[in-house]
Each structure stands twice: as structure tokens, then as C-alpha cells.
Image (cartoon, rainbow, N blue to C red; front, side, top):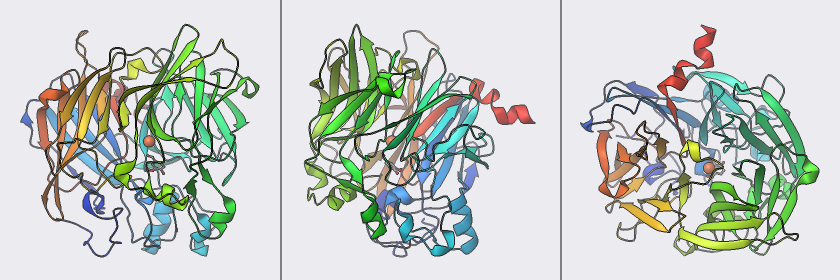
Length: 496
Ligand code: V55
Ligand code: FE
């Protein structure tokens, strides 16, 4: 069953396969559970799902432009409820009233209907962020939108009561598990194609305590960053924005294969003048960083690195013709010796090419034993069309960077996997649980999805419980786990 007939939307990877628009706001209680969900899994799995509510203005529109939907699995006493709603951004509301798309190409306001000039373009479709008792739906081209974690109603744009002066907020903030502070940034912070970065900190209660500004070497897409106990780390890859290209109606991002990369490292409570810039290889790209931590005077940064940009449309805008299957790279460790002068750092391969890494919240910025990420199963048949880059992952890896051990949960042909969230266990020697959506192709345009519950320390064994979904699910970007204890302390519940 599809709500939006195939054929109405463009016939590209951005609107077909698992990326076929669904656009249904719905909820269900007591979904069927096959197997048994461990009782200690008690809370909510929030997901960010891009899903265009209207036909795009341009047939070459991309999956990253889809209106953000916020989805929630509520899990308690082995029971599962589900709900999904649109984030009512300014853009969604304007287009809903007009009953058609008014905003044009991805991050290009020069292609919009003049009726919406100057209005907020963000679609809040990338990451649900929980901090200070609030839930935000984020996308890096605008501010986050606060959402009621109980009802999924949109509360409004979030700028820390006017204290945060950046126009943008990253989809990848980092929360220090010891201090509870959230570290975050916005790039293009004062406008389109600007090199300005705003770097900010909010305390554990969600009050803005710091905001500083600095310039990056050129206007790149800084999708993710990392923190350690003492440092903030900003990777700069050569996918760049250009105002003249935008004014001509072109792409926001174009990858530049010959341009050098950079890493900026500064004391996390420091000043912009304390930033140290390290120079890296040209042409490389990473969207997601696994973790960073300190070991003596060294900083290790583990990241999902590739030798070119993983998004076909960002490569093509830069004149790079390369099939998705020919993108090379792997889970990589960069080591920076902060006692040594100079711009260089060490590089070492940790694991195969992949993305969508997950870490235990308690390991953020700390030495860690294991992480999980997604990859392509060589035995899994051709990957299904779907997800942000148009090719869905069909294998999950658990890696121990300390000793190189890798465990695998590979899927059968015709299956796909979305990024997991991690749920901690109360048992000290248990690694916790992973929750994720797994899709299976049942017919040419028929995809069935299930929520899987997997033992994080024994992924090769497959799921301990499965929850078949009664309606189609569009591919997710990122998710977040919020425990019932955290939900009980939500700011919306204190207002009542
Ligand atoms: C990414 C996702 C986005 C975006 C830019 O995963 C980069 C990377 C879902 O939106 O706008
Ligand atoms: Fe991301």
C-alpha cells in the first residue's frame, strides 16, 4: 500500500524504492511482537524521517529536501506503540496552506516561489536531539524545532530564548556523559555560503553558556564534529558552496577532488584564537565521526572516511563521475600529537567502508571498547534503492578498535537496515541493546518493515524480538533513544 502513487513523484532514487514517499501521519498501540522485548528496554526510540509532503518543484530534487517527520516507538513492559507526525516547520505550514511546494532546490532559496522569499527553508529532517529535557528535530541548514515528546506536536523554532545568535544548528551535537553539557555548532552561521562557524555549549539544564565564532578555511559542509574531555574537533572536507552557483539556480554543494582537507582542534572551553589547524589529504570526505578521545598527549579521532563524497549529487555537481560502488574508504583512525608542532597527523585503517556509526552515550569523548556501524554485505545481493545516498545498507558491524575484532549481522538479499539506536543495560557486564528498522522487499514496489531488537554484544545472533509494521516506513536518517526516566523529567510535563 502506498499513499502517494508511484509515478506522481520523479522516477529517481530519491523518490523510488525505500525512498518512495509515504506521507501518512498515523499511530498504533500494542503492535504485534514476535519474541520477547527485554523488560529493561523502557523508553522511546525517536526517528527523523524525510518524507516530501508535496510534489517537488524540480524533478531533480533530492531525498535530503524531504519534509521532516518525527516518529516515536514507545516501548514499555514488552509492549510497543508507534506514532509519526510531520514537524510543522514554517516551510511545511506554508506549503500545507498552499497545497503545493513553494520552496525549490536543496538549500537554494534563489529557486523558491517569490511568495516565500525570506521565509525559513529548513525541513528539520535529520536528527532527533534530546537535551535539557527538550526534544528537538534538527537539520544543519536552520535552527532546530522543539517537538513535544509526548504528543509529537511542534512547539516552535529553538534559539535558546534568543541567546543563540547563529542562523543554523548542526544535526550532530555531542553530549558529554560526565557533565551533561551539549556541545554544538552552526556553519554558514550568518548566511548562505559564509565561512562563519558559531560554536556553542549548553549546560545540562539546557541553558546556553557559551557561543564563540570562527572562520573555516573555506565554506564546507561540516556535518558532524567531535569532543574529547578537553577538546572540540572540527573536520573540514572539500565539498564547497558557491553563491554564484546558487544564484544561477545550481547545487548548494559540489565536491572538489583536488582541494585539501583540514581538521581544526581547539580547547573545548577555549577561544577561537586557540584553534590549531591540521592539513589533510585532498578530495577525502566523511559525514559521520564515530568518536574521539585522549590518550596522554594524543587525540584519536575515529571516522567513517571515503576517498570522495558519498553523495552522488555532490560529486556530480563537482564534475566527478564515479559509480556509488566505486567509492572507497573505511573506518579510519586519525591520531594528532598535540605536543608536536606542525600540521600533520597519523592515519590508520580500523575497519571496512561504512557509515551511520553508533556509540554508547556513556562512551562519548572517552576511550571506548566497541562501536557499531552499517555497511554493505558482500553476500547480501544488490543493495536496495533507498536512504540518503540512494543505496541502502544491508549489514551491521560491531567493531572493537582496541584489538581489531569485528562481528557481523548480515542481512539476506532484498533486505535493508536503518541506523540503530543504543539502549544501555542495567547489568554491568551487558553491552545493552540495539533497536533498528529493517526493511524487506516483498514485491516490485512493496516494502515491509520491522523493528528489530538486537543484543549489542551478540549481533551475529540476529534479533531477539521483531515488531512487524502494518504500514510502509520511509527510510530514516538518524534516531535517538530517550529513557522513560528522561521523559518523566521533560520540560513539557513541568509546564502542565
Ligand atoms: C546529510 C543529511 C541531510 C543533509 C545534509 O547525512 C547531510 C548527511 C537529511 O539531511 O541535509
Ligand atoms: Fe548525519
